Length: 391
Ligand SMILES: Cc1cc2nc3c(=O)[nH]c(=O)nc-3n(C[C@H](O)[C@H](O)[C@H](O)COP(=O)(O)OP(=O)(O)OC[C@H]3O[C@@H](n4cnc5c(N)ncnc54)[C@H](O)[C@@H]3O)c2cc1C
Figure 1: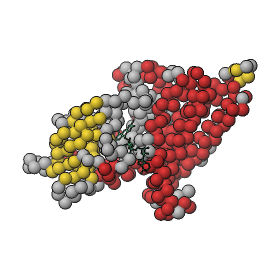
Figure 2 (figure 1 turned 180 degrees about the vertical axis):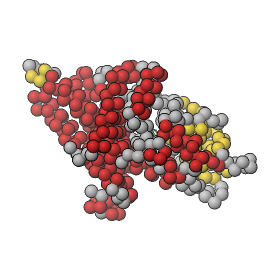
Figure 3 (figure 1 turned 90 degrees about the vertical axis):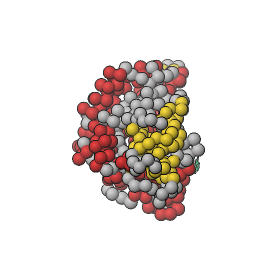
Figure 4 (figure 1 turned 135 degrees about the horizontal axis):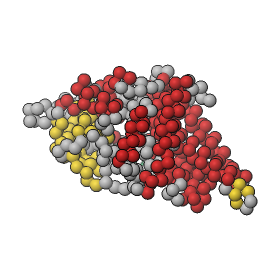
């Protein structure tokens, strides 16, 4: 099905094997605030590397998988079958980075990230700048100290994985100089003097990765930590969004697949009034709608990936990644809601996969651009290029 090649099926199988191996630990993680014992978490990370499913998006020359976009989707789809972020060791370092990284940055950041030795986090969003990244107030000034570096200031929100990361991408507006007011991105090693956690709020999901509010106060970075050129910051964000939106879509497919499987298995065995509940039309409708939407969503996401692999127009890809993210995340949300309903009271128990996905999937409609932002992008491209160019 879906015209997958032998190579596609092989990497999909390895990723599925990993997901199946970590799924049994979900309940334990859920009840322990998302944490597994350190040796177990390390074993999972090592297993993901052993199966060759990490850094699938990075070039082979740098030690990555050099996989097609479709293969990356197939891997992330399996990651999405797992709750509590237990499959996050299947990491994807930023694929836009090798093209702009200096030889020194390749050695210090990119290659260690590909090898799984250093992990990144993203410090972009602020209290008053989420959907509209151009509104950020963080600043980068050339450091007058003679070293040619920068002084970074700003308070960043929702910095995912700050508690486990070895370095942050920090986005700021330049103050002074020829690019005054433009964006720039910097590597900030963690820990660094001047970088401190303001607070660590609790979120709906139960995972070991935190999303703290982080203050950067007069943080000095050398000029060698500038990513690309001054003024490039926004370009990186857009490229990253395209990739990450498609991967969000892929993970939502995996979640919906798991949920449709679990709710069907329950519905055919759970008997009420002497009948399996799958025989009740209202329950059958929930099952049928879920699988139908999953099939439609998967076809959309795979075709979007194939379009990128064919080297299509980047603006068309941008709109299609938005369509995939929008539809797959909303589809998965509907499927999770139905799954809770099909499981009845059991669907409200934290030990039940439907309950966990019901909470965990909610953020897929928010991060990497909300559903409203995706709709605005799609409609904007429709007006510019005409619907026929996009679908
Ligand atoms: C768990 C989690 C992890 C995150 N991780 C990171 C991270 O690692 N790094 C990082 O930098 N950020 C991260 N984020 C931030 C995330 O990207 C933002 O929350 C998201 O982009 C939305 O921004 P906002 O929360 O400020 O909402 P706002 O931009 O304030 O939006 C509020 C509402 O207004 C709507 N809206 C906004 N603009 C428009 C418009 N033009 N048209 C129609 N409606 C609109 C939105 O859709 C939304 O419904 C994370 C967020 C969460 C929840």
